[in-house]
Amino acid sequence: MYKKIIAYINAENELEESVINRALAYEQNGADELLIYNYSILEKEREEFLFTVKTIVKKIEIPVMIGYCAKRFEDIKKAFYTGATKVVLPYCKLTDISILKEGSDRFGKDKIILEFDASAEKNDGILQREDLIKDILPLGMDAVLIKHVYMTESILEKIETAPYPVYIRDSLLRNDMETLMKTKNVLGVATDYYENKDIYKIKRLLEDAGIEMNSFRSNLQFSEFKLNEQGLIPVVTQDYKTKEVLMV
Image (cartoon, rainbow, N blue to C red; front, top):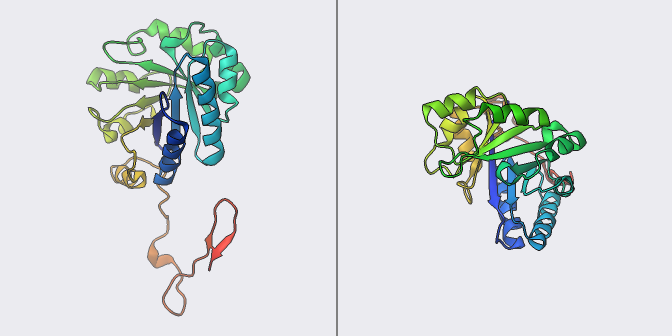
């Protein structure tokens, strides 16, 4: 299974145009998925954010996760109605954990991700409390997203042996991408570190380190292609969305 580089965008206090442009750039540069979040509790900002995500989903091809503060089941519905493939819910902001069960029953257990803060200041307990894990697993979730992780040997072991898949959100200031990606049980890493960078290049470097990535490398060697009379490879250039042939 491919490991994923997920570009995250904090949409709080951001102009809609800025968020959309960053999303388009991340797709162009090779991100596997997007995580766009806004945990505002102000109704006007929440509605504007949902509209922005809906606009982005229509403009890009890669999957979009939406991070949204849900107080009731209706909030989960609104988040999914943007067209997002998964909804990320911050555990610390959940006032009624039963909405997880409602959400997973309606949209599927593979659609909801719980976000936990592993920092020393705001430890949500996901890496320390076995009782918490036992409580939330039956409610239905696809995976957990852990942010502010300081990768010690003990933390690494807990992530690798966790009874659920893990995404890590990290700015890559203290941890490095290769270490995080090589961690067993980690599906992918969400980061903003690669803004305006060639993510395809990062994927190729990770592949060279033995990590399976979706880098669109050809399985054929150049020598296997059939050449024409001029020693060139005949190529058809086609728009991947409209299928229009642009050049032969």
